[in-house]
Image 1 (cartoon, one colour):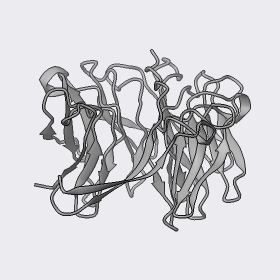
Image 2 (cartoon, one colour):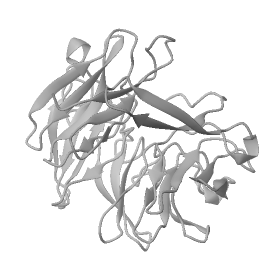
Image 3 (cartoon, helix red, strand yellow):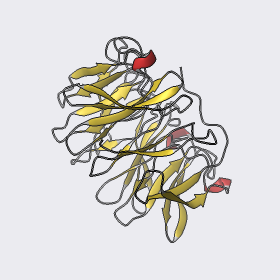
Image 4 (cartoon, one colour):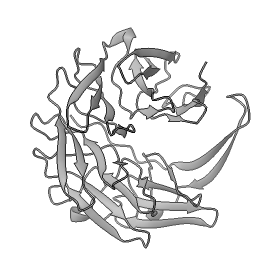
Length: 324
């Protein structure tokens, strides 16, 4: 089943400056997406280039109302590419990854010849190239997540559906556009329907989470070796134990991983080591949902994230969780 797509509402790009305590922060709105041809409804996270420019995507808006890739700097806002559908791709959910040369890489949820999504590259001159178009068969379909780059320029990501059991895949795409399915999810016990992407450790292992299946159908955290061997590090049990981790993992300097999951009517932040030791770090109060929002981690091990609900207005919060 496909997850509900975003409703038609405008969003903002904002900057939050932390000034000591977690609640002492100043927000500055950098851009309001009020001009529909310039993009609307950004769902993915922003990426920061070496020059300090911010890059991202919008799910809708643009010249064809199928989303855009944009750049923001102190000089202003610029649409780098408007998706037009069909072979070009359409409706990107995720943000972009940046290589050392400044090229951008990402996915669109729809579009391509089979309308099952594509992986694209935006060169520094703004030229878009479709690196791979999913067919919806064994190669995967509907990538919600973006891509991760390795030092050789290979791209790694996940699809929500497709594969042998139609429960999603983990894939690799070479710089030349050759796709290799690294793992095809089967449900129990290895997981199903990944929404978040994968991250790499220094040894080339991939780590990610699925909101479905696992040992008890509530999701799993997995590891895939460079040889393609998958290991389930942890299966969520649901209920008070948590489950349905939609977001990607993040990794700290010590090699530990962090993510978010659901608990009844609330959200959970967790830590898991490379060997699979699981620890609950923080549980939000009722009505504060964090399971579909990714985390960021700084050099000191502080975690930052957002929730979809909660706070005085019930519309979400931005939070910091320190190593203690």
